[in-house]
Image 1: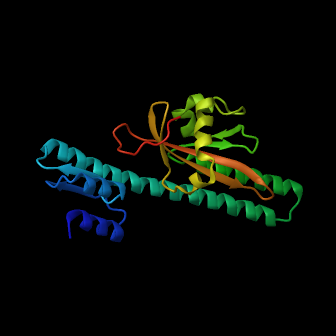
Image 2 (image 1 turned 180 degrees about the horizontal axis):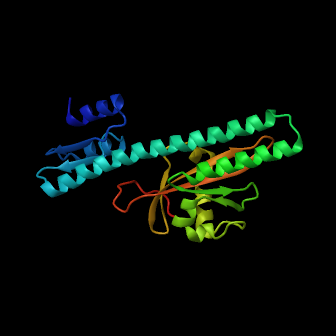
Image 3 (image 1 turned 120 degrees about the vertical axis):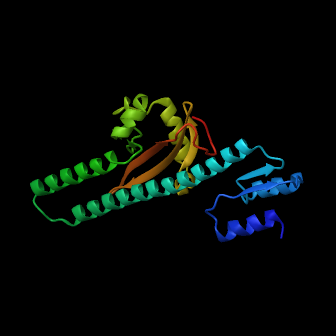
Length: 221
């Protein structure tokens, strides 16, 4: 098989690998097909520049590590969301006096805030009325212009990001949606929050990427 066929098969067997081709074969159609199918991450042509080759290999490792970290962070968000859901279900089953129920709800809310404050990314809570209802520590530190709208409608650039993420198909991206926000590379997630009786709104998560992180930048807010 050709090198492209080999990498196409490698993609099928090991889809999470980062694959590159270094070749003297320059058939444009083969290159286009390989890139479009996602069989190769980089197609490099001989003769090569040693420094440029090292640069591509370095960023390939960086891309793989970034993907692994995104999966870990998504798992942490899912776990936090699961714990919040379980807490809500426990509260619903409790048949106690009003004062005891109020104390339990306060404790659950405090635990939820602590969990979200511990995440290494900015978290914004959007209420069902569209207003910004919550920001965690990273949100205040990384996006102060957005966090300052707490209790009000989201700032225009934040609303633009929300508009991109709210369509249902965007919620399926477990690795986040890459985009450029005010000149900064970031990955973003939207997580709907289900209440006991009705939806509570959603969480917007924004992971700011390092300047040299190699990502495919999507829509720009």
